[in-house]
Image (cartoon, rainbow, N blue to C red; front, side):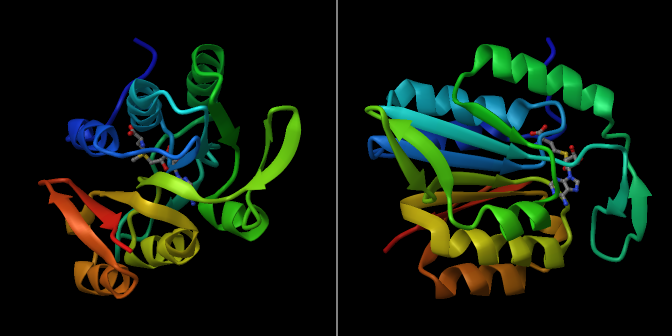
Length: 200
Ligand SMILES: C[S@@+](CC[C@H](N)C(=O)[O-])C[C@H]1O[C@@H](n2cnc3c(N)ncnc32)[C@H](O)[C@@H]1O
């Protein structure tokens, strides 16, 4: 199998996506693609609900670059290589027409894609930027997660899901307060992943 994961509790993503009542147009995103399992799980779950249109965005710079994975760890090279990108991204493009890849860091995606994505519906070009589910699984520092939340919180749909991997490594007090301030509640807390859902 080309697609692999490096974490646990992917079934929680499936469970909470499958409970959603989707609008006809659905946008989802994963920060940190690696070998693709998080994105595959999101796309498979959305397929079960059969919306009129789905676009899934994966954002990952690969290139084996050195960055801080966890708070106070210093920069580390973790082996997310261009070969890994080529294998994973080509498989996903071939098997999931709803998949789209952005070869860049989260920061650059936020700087450039805040207006939304161009989609074509009934031969009409639209700009769409409201996310139904996002999986935050790139850098796991509190600073990076806060920056990711600052982008996504105002761009989530009603009942939108924000899934955070390795949440126990974060300063969750700050993260939880930010999300609750904007009416996100905990839908489920696992050992590894925590899922927030927008209530208003
Ligand atoms: C823990 S892995 C992702 C695992 C994957 N989501 C899964 O379910 O198996 C982390 C990934 O984040 C990527 N990454 C590192 N810095 C990033 C950044 N600033 N923005 C987006 N992705 C980043 C790495 O290249 C790596 O592929």
